[in-house]
Length: 114
Ligand code: AMP
Ligand code: ZN
Image (cartoon, rainbow, N blue to C red; front, side, top):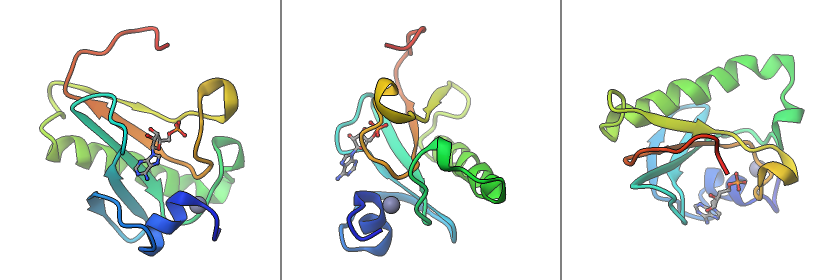
């Protein structure tokens, strides 16, 4: 997707602050962090929203979570705790329509979320 911000990061057209990269997944720091650690984990292949995940994407989506746990370990959050969030469409606050898992931590989290 040539007009997708996160596809541009995957292709290197825009250089994110990369935390982790695998064959299928890229993880980089959020430009507007909501906590001391705020990393976005994205599939390298464009998928717009959770609603667009196909059965054939199940392994890829699982890899987002494996990467999130690896990011948490690297950031020293694995034991103290962290939150993963994937927003879908307008009411959840999705603003970038390329699937991404927020990995947020480094401070206590409230519940319910806003
Ligand atoms: P969401 O609102 O769930 O779609 O999350 C999109 C996230 O992308 C927000 O937390 C933004 O701060 C983040 N974001 C937007 N532009 C950039 C950018 N150029 N580099 C890193 N993160 C970005
Ligand atoms: Zn994209």
